[in-house]
Length: 178
Image (cartoon, rainbow, N blue to C red; front, side, top):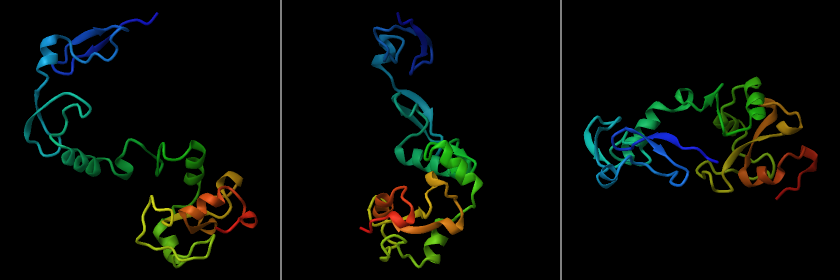
């Protein structure tokens, strides 16, 4: 049988019991539920504002402030999701370990070095095309990491996302050119 647990009220921060019959209860009383507006100060612009408790927990007065604050404070190595130069959760633990052991490779330098030519189909890659377009540029491992390839300059080349996905983890001799 599930037990009750304590939760802080989203309006007054008073602790109250939450029972299995109402696990999504957010307020301690009907009064807090009817008048959930609270005074707060925006973390980004420092202006006072009234907020209704919810997903942003009253940290920002509007979405543009939230986006500006996160882009300023949580980019790259400042991010709590950043582990050893690679964003955690984006790749598997095994792939992140291979990347850490490999070289620090700038994707743009690889694309420029290969003159924006797809390593798989041999066609030009348009630098202006961005993901999620299937003709956008991606970094292709010639010998796939899953087959023992390393994340080093000699093993990477540019490819269209579509070509790279069709290649999958096949070795260079086993590829059907799209």
